[in-house]
Length: 213
Image (cartoon, rainbow, N blue to C red; front, side, top):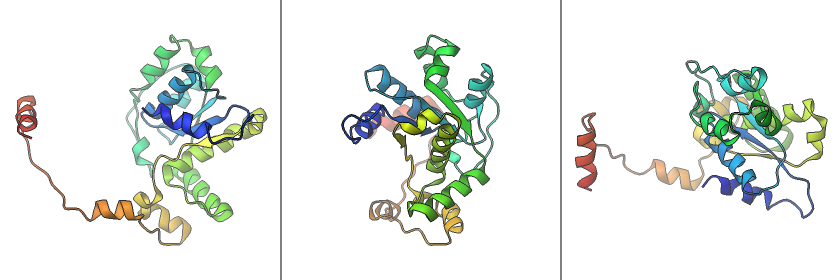
């Protein structure tokens, strides 16, 4: 279903535009896999940018050809703190395990929390657009790719915004020196009562609970 994002975004470009470069904040790589599938289904695209935080197993693979999972590290873009991205197996299968073919379509870059913070603050100061920490990683990935491959600068760039900055107010507000307001839709969710039920960690307990719904 996430493949739809890519088709919808590309459809917003002016008619006759070159194929876009998609920059994807990546942790478990499900979103980027969806983009590659969209391309396989016929969506014209340029290279995909896999932008990660310091949990950079895939950028390291793209640089060395070695896929070496390791324990995850905590970062400000915490939804991307994945040391062994399970969806990378799907990407590899999509290319028949051919490293060179993967390199044709995929670029990978990693960014520290400091670099993420600097990008978030700079983009807000220059444009007034407020990124969340995850999307800031994607933005930095697109900028880096364009610097390293000038040909990409001639292609439209699309950064997938994977979260709302209001979800990360404790990280964002000190960077911009302003309060981040919750959108009404998110505020309504937070005002709802919390419901939870304890279950034994057993499959039969889960099954009994689901059957009782």
